Length: 470
Image (cartoon, rainbow, N blue to C red; front, top):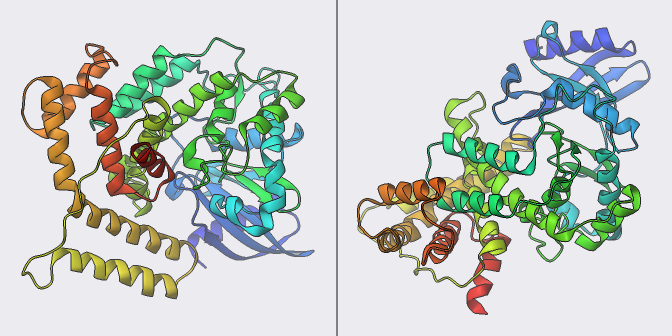
């Protein structure tokens, strides 16, 4: 038995009187920021499955992106459960003597967390009709938890809307990558801040994919409290409406399964407070801004560890999805794209043929011969090779057009990298107004062009291209 399994078995022996033996512990494919394991054990009453959640690689859970840490996350889940929020029972919070890093062991819940299945599978057809209302009720219960009474204020970050925008913008600036649409959106958010309202506990990642759904009962578990804070409760309502979490069902803005009106009605019924739709829209824009930066942070973490998996740089390329959602929300309009260049040449084999051969091996051989996390990672790797292939076809023309637009916008020519940085600095220091002639058109074309490389099947790309068709 591996050392990891031995340490886990020792912990379970100590904290569970009914524990007999550890049968298996397998890491699940979901969760790019934390590790989650399915733990199968034998107890005196028979077999049982638990879940283990811990920091990547078992490292001490020191976070540079906010969040209370895994021990407080476990405590929040227990408090939410006591408040009537569907949540698993926490069985043990790991300590330094356990030898497993930061994390906790919890009850295993049965249900579906894959967002694409929840929005499309036939078995969820009936429950989908009431999920948005149910989510509104659950969020009202979360926001009603008294953080002062439970001595949580010293553990949870307190963020006003303005502070939240600035904090996320600061994270992005530390990454050292010029993404002008992110800077434009930060400026837009600061110019459209919502009216002040009482701050409450905010889950901050309440979305399809972090909810466990049963075909009969609906939401049976609210998971992943790792970025909870004290802030504007409408953040949670805007986040579940963010397009990234609709899984292609863009006509159903609440998680891809429901309508905003039902979400707002459920919230109002449980809280006694009406919902301002424009207030929620601000947080929907912020949601795409937040995840555009969060995706880049995932890629940056690939460079520095501790979890150097193929998934992290692939998630980094999802930033353009979120940026196009910002485009569609605050600067919709038509844009054209160059024709894809054809692969040709006398090399045998060509570079594209090498990439295609590896991609097809991953999809057709590796995925067929594996399961679980390895199969998932093979799919991610194959998708990354598709990005490289599209970049070879579209990238040169798109970058040439971007450089031409930037030179016209800034009034002089230099390298593309230098022009990108100059625009970013002007947006950051406020010397370029958001209404600058040509700015919106340039950003729209740049972001949509990048997404044509990164993920042209994304629903936000299709929405953007419909503007042109219209």
